[in-house]
Structure formats: C-alpha cells, structure tokens
Length: 115
Image 1: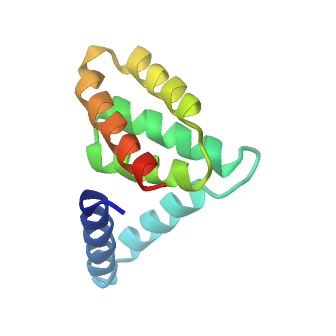
Image 2: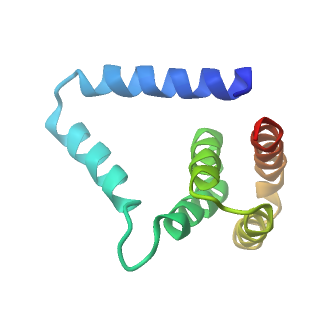
C-alpha cells in the first residue's frame, strides 16, 4: 500500500474510532446507516460502491472518492467500469468534477501499481 493510501486509511480509522467514542447516539446511528447502505441487497455491493463513487465525485469530496475507489477495488471493479463511472460523474457534475477526476485516476493508478 502506498504511503498516501496508508495514511488515509490510518487517519480515517483513528478518527472514526475517536468520533464513535463520543457515545453520541445520533452519530452512531448515522455511521451504522452508512455502513449498511452498501451491504448487498437488490443491488450488489459493487454497484452500490460505484454509485457512492459517482455521488462523491459530483459532491466533490476527495476523501469519499478515495474511500469508494478503495472499496470498489476490493469488490473487484475493473478499470473499464471505473472509467464508465467517472464519465457518469463528469456528465452529471460537469467540468467542475475534472480536478476530482484527475485525483481519482491518480488514486486508481496507485492501487493498480500495488496489485
């Protein structure tokens, strides 16, 4: 795992633990809802992660984009499928998505080098 992705994962896990330690019921419920939304159902997890990726790109959240790219790779998403999802995000979000598209491709490249 690249240093960038290792740092991202460690920080995310550390801060999620810290946030959940606050014992705030509403925050815990939201975190649980978020996790459960990606479990397989009528749609497989892979499709749901791709949907999360597209939404994250349109909303321009780089942390979320990185998270969903990692999860999509873990779910076996191909580069061709990533590029189609990136295109959907670009069409829906417009040119303002382009900087996030660049970073998304760089993250995907990092993951592919490690594989």
